[in-house]
Length: 205
Image 1: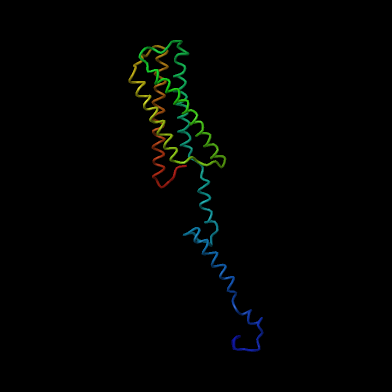
Image 2 (image 1 turned 90 degrees about the horizontal axis):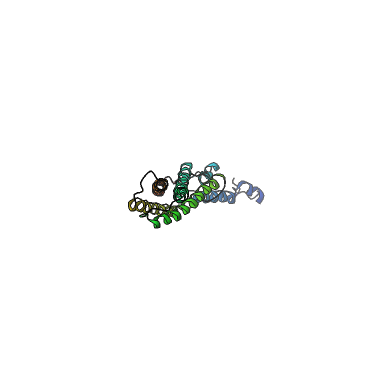
């Protein structure tokens, strides 16, 4: 006879044979909550729950840091030769030189040096620390602004005045223009890199 029809069984003996419904409910609820938080992941395997944590700790791109470092060198070259032309040659700028373009190059190259140093420093902080990366929209604006600035300077410095090769001032001035062209090219590459990183499935760090 079952425990329900046998009057001689005590309540304790009846309770031992009944399943513990509260424990099974708690177990099912915990599985449901884990499934909602991480859909598609087997809750029986705790190692799979750490995937997102590993992706967040992915190191930044070393190639991107090299690009920023070369941009830093190009900016230093543009500013150095532009600044040293009158100092080394001990001559004033020849007539016909766009003085406004020279002043604007001082400003743009100096800011580019500071920005490039910050990017390299940020890479080191992200690589060896827990620093956060800059938003991609801000990177778009920075790279686009410098690409346009160096591009405009390149056009005006080359088009307004043709400095003859052979004099110290012109040699330094032409070298500064070459580094200005290089800066424009590197910022265009960085901007394209940002666009590709935004619209591709693989997000570049």
